[in-house]
Image 1 (cartoon, rainbow, N blue to C red):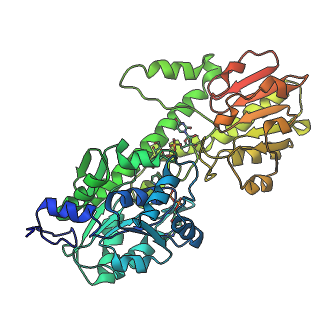
Image 2 (spheres, rainbow, N blue to C red; image 1 turned 30 degrees about the vertical axis):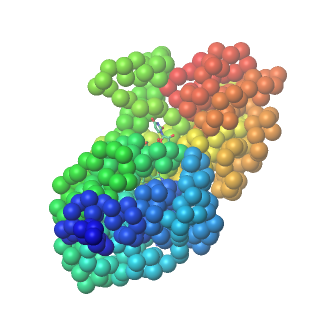
Image 3 (tube, helix red, strand yellow; image 1 turned 180 degrees about the vertical axis):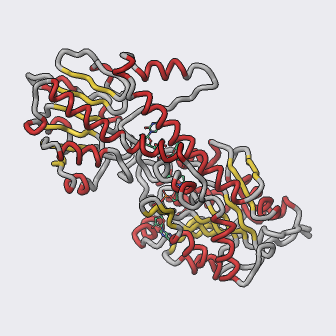
Length: 458
Ligand SMILES: NC(=O)c1ccc[n+]([C@@H]2O[C@H](COP(=O)([O-])OP(=O)(O)OC[C@H]3O[C@@H](n4cnc5c(N)ncnc54)[C@H](O)[C@@H]3O)[C@@H](O)[C@H]2O)c1
Ligand SMILES: CC(=O)N[C@@H]1[C@@H](OP(=O)(O)OP(=O)(O)OC[C@H]2O[C@@H](n3ccc(=O)[nH]c3=O)[C@H](O)[C@@H]2O)O[C@H](CO)[C@@H](O)[C@@H]1O
């Protein structure tokens, strides 16, 4: 007769670890994943391929319908559509619109819904609402894992009290951990399966133990356990702050190209040849839903001076205007009044290959060029909804060849722009090319092109 212990939940289990692992990977411990977006769907799919028993909760019925049809609504994630199809077909993954219903059955709850920032103030309303739903369905022995990026101390001060109030249980009867999502859009499955070490911070030692067991099964990578949930929250935010400040350094150095009369990007590349230097890449601006917002997870909730973070944000937020001015000045130097010029803005998403415009530098660049009186055209090969750019004053065209521009501003270096034939766009005249991502440097010194870059020129 099997001596295997029946394990129905992980937190507080005294069963042999092997039995706990077997219970988790055999699907006897149901998993709920709350939020099936760019990060939540790949995460739910990897949980499903690991455990065979995952229900996703998403308030968007279209998302739920798409998943239950065996498809991914998230574009640009290699392998995700196939994995969703396989796991749904196998009965390992399903989705529904009611988080509370999912919470009733799940014993491991993984929360990865958006953390909004209202102007400069973190807004945890969505995360809190899911915590209420999870709390209402919480049972002793359950483990709750937050993966949404959170201001440090959120789990301890905001979410644990909600879970306890809604469930009538206390920490020690259920577990709580913060395990940040260290995933890059465009390579989510690779990252979730273990491209980087997984950080685990539990509200107590047993939460850390249970979360480690879960992520040991999910990802083929090292687990970095830290002291508590606040430390784990800080790890994620600090990673983003490092990036924002580092990009700001690169951008500020780039503005010295004229004064120094050098190619600053060349100097950065050479500086980075020794291990103690990792200056990032200057560019047209810093967009997305992560980097531009993470600073406010520290500058807003805590009464500690943050001059460096605020200055870095100001430097990066100034790059779209800096980039637009390169075009306007270039036109004037070529004897073209911007008010008589046609300028094509190429690349509207916040970074190449990701169909997202959150805080994209392209929008303020369009606005600045339109404000200067230029006729602004805009194009992006992967973006379907371009309405915000029309509102900002641009005429959206399908491709660069639909334009007869006096200037081109490359904001986002999509693969489709790699072989952009700029001289052909120039026609008979000389075209001003503002290369916001050092993607078209082959046109430096070209007779038909005035090349302006961020940190380098003709
Ligand atoms: N996108 C990234 O590159 C990235 C990387 C790492 C971490 N993160 C973090 O992951 C979290 C999710 O980001 P994302 O990019 O997947 O967001 P997203 O906007 O792509 O998806 C969020 C999903 O949550 C759903 N949702 C909203 N409210 C809900 C609720 N109450 N219950 C259930 N579902 C709800 C939405 O319908 C949507 O499908 C954020 O905290 C973000 O900071 C994102
Ligand atoms: C797990 C997670 O949360 N992952 C996030 C995700 O962030 P993301 O999707 O927002 O992508 P980023 O690459 O950070 O770009 C942001 C903007 O900054 C511009 N930029 C970038 C680098 C540079 O040298 N110079 C720049 O100007 C770029 O054009 C774009 O507009 O991946 C990052 C890396 O893995 C992570 O650090 C970050 O936490």
